[in-house]
Length: 133
Image (cartoon, rainbow, N blue to C red):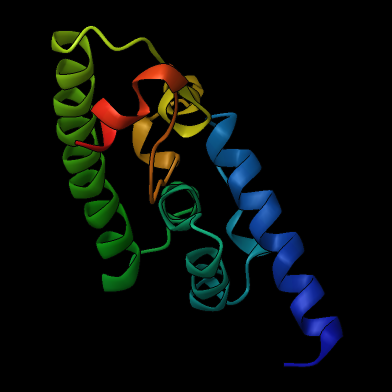
């Protein structure tokens, strides 16, 4: 792709994510190549939001469905892991504060729109050794 084509796909991705976050129906005619946009969304961890907006515009494909299903699965796995981490910190009496994605995911219309790859947690530095153990 040329730089100009990449810029157009970026703009389409921004449009789709905006529709998803605002819970608005996307316009199909604004996305001439949905799979290209979905590929770019994947590299920015925006697959689920883009896929949901593409679905709202009437697009259907295996890759769109897969993006939504994978994000659902990951959201369940990450929530389960977070519950275990928080319970362990609570049981150990370690003060902590979840940061960024752990908190931000709840601000999206659907939790699966906020794809995560890790958890950022501020911990009591005096208990860092206990956390590591």
